[in-house]
Length: 62
Image 1 (spheres, helix red, strand yellow):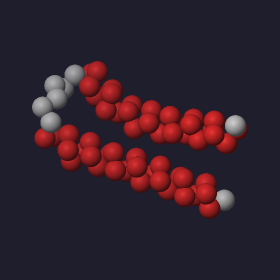
Image 2 (cartoon, one colour):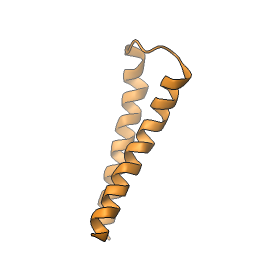
Image 3 (cartoon, rainbow, N blue to C red):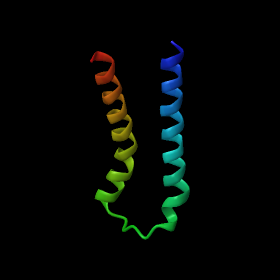
Image 4 (spheres, rainbow, N blue to C red):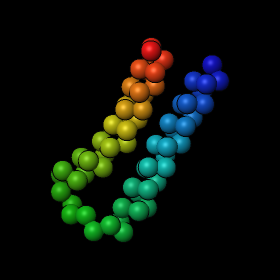
């Protein structure tokens, strides 16, 4: 149980870190305000978390 809680805490902290990086670091980047860029910035954290969870699930089943 503590392994699961620890993993979820790591995912939560990583997601919060990426969110803070986007919030405070984003205005300093010269990125054009297009739909594609905004979609990439919104979906990237979720895709990273999904990839980590998939890898973890595959490791547990093997």
